[in-house]
Image 1 (spheres, rainbow, N blue to C red):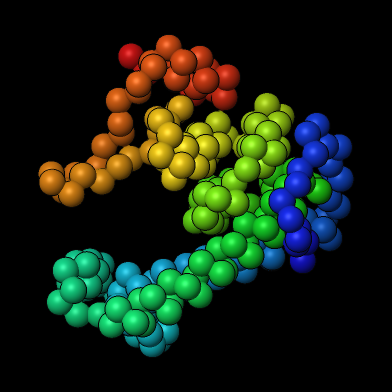
Image 2 (image 1 turned 60 degrees about the vertical axis):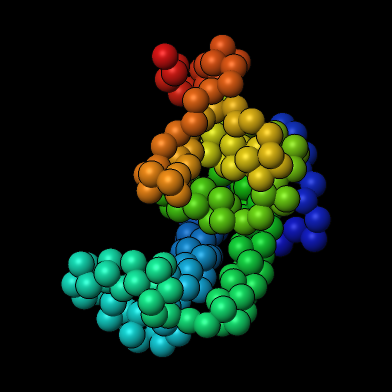
Length: 208
């Protein structure tokens, strides 16, 4: 496992091209991270600690699972607040560890090509935005320009970080849930010219 003790990334890094054995190892490690990324989230979503019952929900009737999730969201059933807090804390630790590990992999090998890009992006997106510093995004931008990372995935992470810092988004690709209307929507750009210039740089379509 590759782990960074602190997040420092060199710009224009010359990456190591992984051989087949390394690629197989990276794929296995990332798939394991994908599983840990969802472990406690499913517990919180379904309001259930028993992993067999969770699997039964996931493999059973989707309508019943959706009803269960709705009831949990309305606090009609599920876990106690203490259980939610404890599980959330455990998931936060996993998310941070996964972020540092994946960042180290990207810094060494470039953005992984052995798994779907969205799998890696989802793991990174679940980490605290406070871990995503300027050097991290410089490293990812290099991967976008090299064709290893889709621009949309980069934009989603960048705007999440901006939102967490209470700054305006730049790319406007993330949906936001409106509690009043119970619908999700993408925000309207504050400076559409700056947004479209930024979107063009990473291969995204203009917003009209």
